[in-house]
Length: 85
Image 1: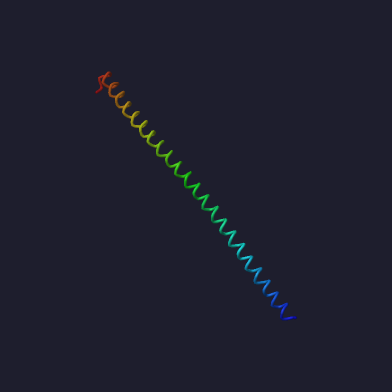
Image 2: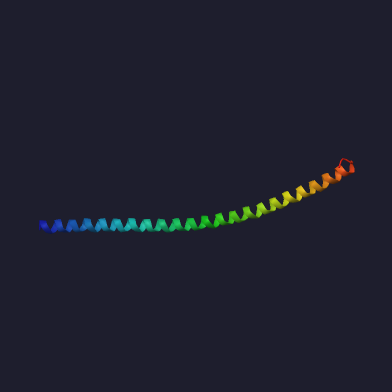
């Protein structure tokens, strides 16, 4: 009887350890899945931000070049009117 109960307890411990390992594995798997989803969302956000930065950079450069050209034209005409050029 004693050998049977020791065998039964050993079987219970093995089953408990296996169940605990399976639960931990499932938990890790769910966490990895959530992590992948978060990574994909952050990647999409980063892509959107990058596109906005490129767009605003082009606008900024265009404004800068336009203002520079206008300043050159204005100063050239100003100095010509003052007969300094």
